[in-house]
Image (cartoon, rainbow, N blue to C red; front, side, top):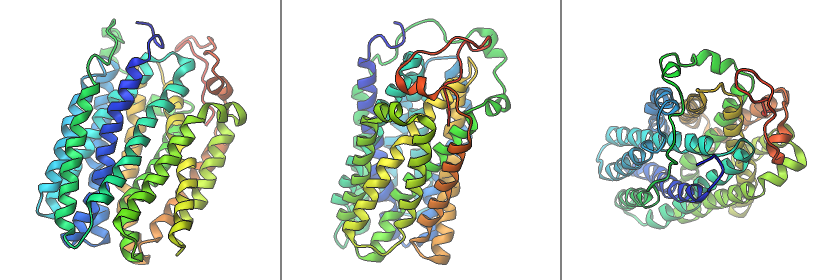
Length: 415
């Protein structure tokens, strides 16, 4: 079937991603609460959150190489099994080191699922549909981020935090397993995506990273995901210090996710109105200010208002960075380029929580949000200074322009 022909697969992928991401979004704050109940301090919470991204940091590129020269769909059930197992076993773990190990397994499963899913969207979407389809795909993540924290907040409460957080992690594992219901025949059958010669001589990683548009897309994605990740892992810690109930923290995190969904529903009109460079620059700049504002001792309603604005601004970076990397990457290396983007994400997820734990230990639990504000400010500068290359075509629904001899596509990235 030709790319862009039947989009039923995309709906089923969004549903599966919603279940998988919902499980992870439920498990991440539950892991933090369980670690605190087992005696962890702010630094230990940061280490456990960082281990979530450690295994994916090394596995992303090999998985991307495999996907470039094979099918995408097999990675999806593997990812679901690892997510479900990591969630459930984190709930059964009785020590901090065991929680860190199973948190890493959960992160590896999430990586497998996301590489397979993103490669599927890139391969089965026509070039002029990629901004829209990646935007719709990431709605699945936002739906999971909307439901997961509410469910975690509802289950984690009372005096027995260790027991209630363990229950939340077991429920998250069951939720992840529900993603299997939408994975049947999700990939279109067709010829192999690359020749045997291409498999024997893969595009070097250095060449991919030097391709115009790829580094900027990676940095913006890293900053946005690091902000989302620290919010999920550290807002419970802020709530504990400010006396905010876990159920309220769950609602606040879900408000951020709801705002992200709203952003992605209007992403195409925003692209037509502002263009990719201005849209990314403005949203990263506003996100930097709002993220730093979380450090202020504002009332709960003010914190909720800031998180709504922050969620809307952070909703722009991920889908546009996917399209940027896919359309900038050489032929036969698009899954590898997406994997490099995910490697950058995981590098941020390893370094940012560790740095956040150190900063929190030295300067207080609100200080990591100031650190994230600085990172987002840097990403806004990268988005502003990066060369523009026909971003309106990508956002406005026009098809690719055939000019390049190597890839046959004029670069449509301008972040």
